[in-house]
Length: 117
View 1 (cartoon, rainbow, N blue to C red):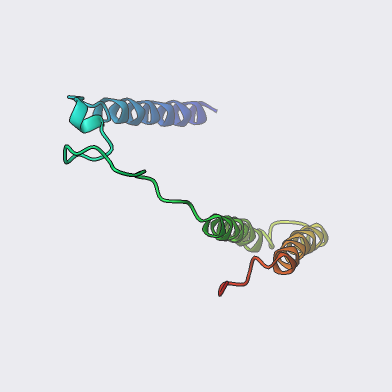
View 2 (view 1 turned 90 degrees about the vertical axis):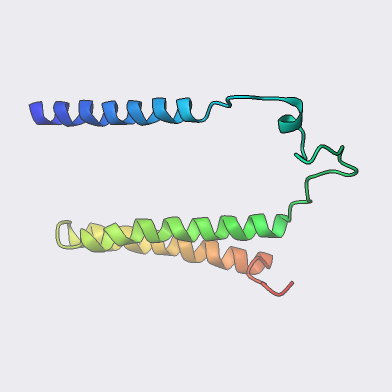
């Protein structure tokens, strides 16, 4: 019990030190009009400096993140197969994979997997 408290205090101390250093290092030392302007060359912008954001790119990114998290959840399931009840492990795995297959089917029906559009 004592070692857990020591470890938690050590982790909180390290985290606090890193957060304090990050906030100190991120402070701007000198802010003037030229540095705050959208272009640092001194000219006033003639048009908007922002480009339109592609919603298709955003949705593809969300799909990637979903399947990336899926891999992060499946890998521990493989490691605990020997430590858990095989019936509960099988049911949990089947439910998890069925949810992913249903989601993939829905994305396919919605046309999100058509990369050439």
